[in-house]
Image 1 (cartoon, rainbow, N blue to C red):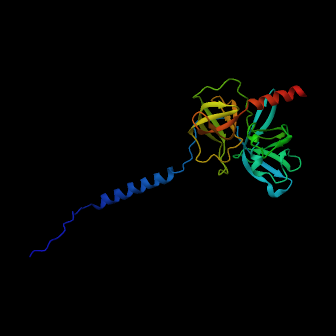
Image 2: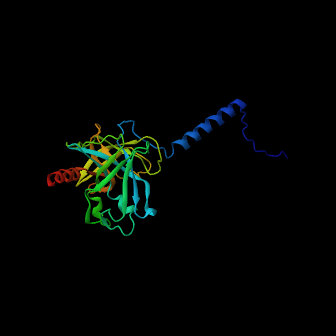
Image 3: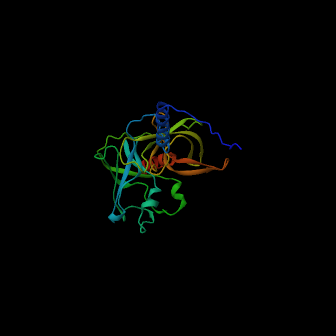
Length: 264
């Protein structure tokens, strides 16, 4: 009786073919690894406009050498420093309960992350309000801190505020650095304007970072570099029930600055 055998197909490969396969396999793995979690940013270029915060507390254990972003604005020949108000909710000591810095913060300095020798030393917090509780959700309503400036040794360009309405679908840009970045030039991230709800600007992502953390307080500007918003947090659109990245409009900030001039 003849035995039965399983006959497997025999594949003959030349050594050169094996080497080619291994080479292209390695390249595909490398590309996959490099692209995963890649930092996407826009090719749009702006002059140097972004800053980060260095905050020195009276109790030094709370000091923040680099925390979130900020920028300068120019209005009627005056220059102001601006960042997000809600960052105080994250870094404040327990004793700090209202929008008042005098008892807890010694110095507030902004500087460009790619040139740490330059600095903007803040003077007074102009929108100080001892009745504004930092624990309240309303902290995000007008999510800005505006400072007068004691000394500016930076070459940062102060921004001017746009005074025309946004147009649905137009490109807008956030300029700054995320939390994990320790150096390098300012990054530019690209969005599309969707709608405004109250004083929140809802944006559609185009070229954005993998994680937005650290961009709080960064400027939102249009194609011409005019300021339209300040990076804050997210807002749910009641029509679609979808959450959008939504910087805070600068409309109320502009009103505050104008009223301050009239009050003096």
